[in-house]
Image (cartoon, rainbow, N blue to C red):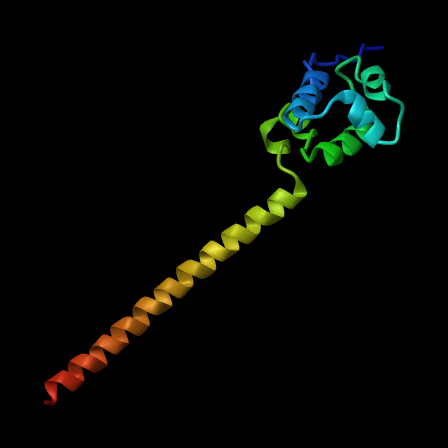
Amino acid sequence: MKKTIKPKIKLPRLAAIVRSWAKYKRTSLRKLSLRMGKSENYLYENMQGDDIRPSLLLILSEVLGANLFEHYTQLLPEPLQTTEREKKLQQEIENLKTENANLKQELRKTEAERDKYWDALAGNR
C-alpha cells in the first residue's frame, strides 16, 4: 500500500493577522470575544495554532469587516484562486467590454453618416 504524500503548506499566521486587525480596529481579542458572545479568553484559546476553524474565521471576518479567508485562497494554485463569483464578474466585464466596443463602432458609423449628410447639405448652398 502506497503512503499518501501530503504537500507541506505553510499556513498563514492567522492569529497574528487577527491581532493586527483588532489593533487596527482599536479593539482587543478580549473585546472581540465578548462581542461574539463568548468568554473573555475564547479567541486567545481558539487561536493558539495556525489552523483555525472555518466557522471561527466566518465570525471573525464579519466582526472585523475583513475577509480572513483571502489568506488561504492565496495558497491555492493560480487557476483555483478565483471564486465562482469572481469568474462571473470577469465574464460580465468581458461582455460589457464587447458591448462597449460594438456601441463605439456603431457611433463611428452614425457619425460618418451624419457628416456625409452635413457635407451634402453644405454642397447644396
